[in-house]
Image (cartoon, rainbow, N blue to C red; front, side, top):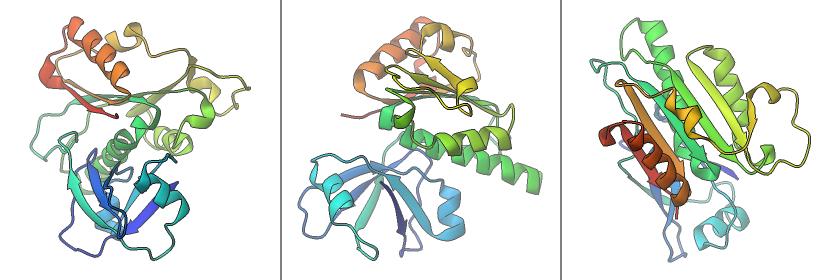
Length: 234
């Protein structure tokens, strides 16, 4: 489910890629969910969005079965996995690598990049953004969250944002709109090696084994550890 929260505290801010501790009245377990909206949406409309997969974890179950319009929760921002360039910073390219629900913080970063491009075009100043490449892997196209939004960003910012969707267990026909962007099989070293450069930052989010193998692959290809950021989903 996608959850939209109206923020009542005017001082609440977050950086693209961060998560929130999610406190539910009457539920003793604290949830932890990444924002899947941009900091710009919070500034413009006073809202944040989360996308939460159903599990038996009490906070996720509450969101799917008990949460209603006007339910109130408390939030606390955390995490050092984020992209928050300042106007004077040197431009960088980004490669974002997502596995399954690991797309959430990376989608927030993608939306933030689109906002940075918009700000640059309208104001003529601010941070000058390099290109962004998203590699997003899931079992099948049904499990690719935000796919329509991602295609929309690609057509709005041609050449600036590009994406390859990888599916590992596709059993049904792939719709025409997605076909040009789909690769069957895992994200490989060959895919990633061509992006290795001194001015590229790498953000990886997904299951721990995927993060281990991809980060190791990057280090072996000569990518500096300072340029690789990851968020592990346990």
